[in-house]
Image (cartoon, rainbow, N blue to C red; front, side, top):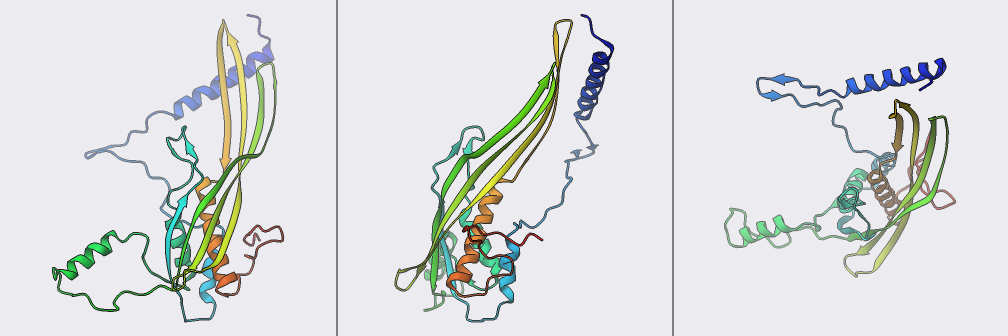
Length: 276
């Protein structure tokens, strides 16, 4: 096959890069007397979103008459199942995300109502005098409100776009896509069962991909080199962000705490943190 000198140079460079990448994928075995040492590159960090600061700022607001709040089920009702990931598309832990969000405010008394299995067993032990501390009337805290709701939307391809160019087997491209998730929460008066406040929020999530490709034939054999980068906002982080902003709105719009600076909802109805 006749290959001009410039083509040969580019092809040799592509093969050199491919070889170096292949060398990097070798098994990084670090053997010790106890076996292979596991890899650990990044430290454990707190699970924060851009909206967590909005919740923590509420703790500085005046007020000591804190409401007792319980969080019930916040279910995934989108009906979305990911065959590729072999599981649900959205987190099944939205209830725990909402509980954590209320805790970050420091302005409520959280009372457990979502999972009473251990509590009921403990009550049974006390009722049957199997533990030293017996049941006492009024020992459990009464709640003022409880919060329930659901993840109600997961919409794909709100916007997708891309462009690419390949000439003689060399080229590249870029793609972007937007999805959104939505959450509906309601706060219920525990004494009257009146729905006191409703929050419905959505957040758009953007994913981007950039790729470059080199294709060449050597004596009838196709040699391909791919390089690229995908950078997506984590979908489950989007779920947590919506949960935190919904709690912030309950605390400010209904319970009357002053909104944190830079955390007010925009005119378009979308809540956004201050991005200085």
